[in-house]
Image (cartoon, rainbow, N blue to C red; front, side, top):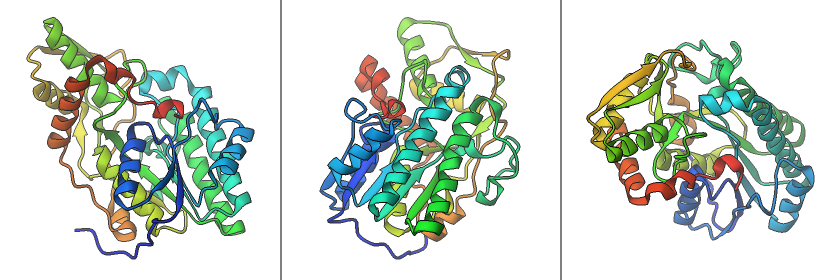
Length: 330
């Protein structure tokens, strides 16, 4: 059970949630409303391109936030990371750089940065502990994205020590759930597999093809559990101490594909393309710091969360492929 921690209310605060119309953002906004927060601003990229300094400054002028939850990112799966290493570094570094500097300039009450498990070194011992963040270089296919996100933590630490900016830094494992990104060109593994299985079933195909060997392992966190962790960080954290958010339960990609296929009712063969990369060999975190500092622990079992995600995708169909706009800074 998570231990009790002292929380300060966000009621009455003006809260900006970048990426608030995206996958994780929707769940975070719902959690904030459940806490009684009524002044929530969700900037859209059509109005504020946060990779531009002037737009970040204008957002602060227009929204006058007390708290910023920075969830917006440009991100994708292995293929998207391989195709966009420069853009993913620039976009994620630029957004954090401009927003954190504006936070300092206006004397923001709290800045919460959502980082990435991709920041960990490629060969980090499992389970990943926050103290291992600097013990090597990230896995090559997603290193630019991971390093940009980790640089934001360094900036927050410097700004806390020099300017007193209160902040938090979270490292969620791979997220999944309703409103995920099901676009096959940019989606992560679970939504990509769900779409692949549902479409193969609907079209009567005898098999699906998956990247790699299936030997790599990952850990997955249901989006509602992650949202609770983000809101708790805004309530309790003052320093950007890195905090893992995860279940502590590891599953191989091969077993994951079998679970997705079973949940979708797909009975065909699964073929592996070993010419494609597996990505980082293993990922699984130690989430004890989140229990200690946030009073948080994951509540959703993978099988239950998978069923809810598949049900949501079936209900929304093709429209779900564009549902997650978090990767494009909504």
